[in-house]
Length: 146
Image (cartoon, rainbow, N blue to C red; front, side):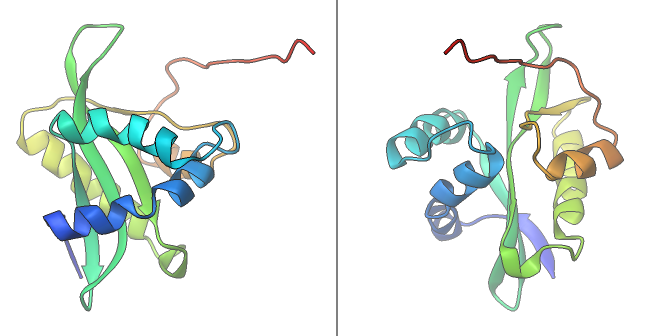
């Protein structure tokens, strides 16, 4: 099993999953559409973002999207996890944790001292992120006025 930077072909394969990723990750808060997926991914990929993939027997098990952003609170450039996804057949096997740890090493290697991510309320991945040391910074709240 290897974790490495995705090839061009693998990146395009990953992009084919974006509607499913968008649906799962946003917990129903975003209506998945090809247009919305493109809107969300274009700045990430055009801004130097890339994927690390976990591969076994030439099959991708999961991926993590890495990039950088400017922390809106401190104006510091920090590493950013744009996306984390494990294909259903490989879940509950430690793949996401291994991808996160590889991402941390990669971000540290290019000089980042901090990493951030966004996670929707109710997303099961939040427990993993907390286990790995992420802390809540802010909470976006919403109320329907119907």
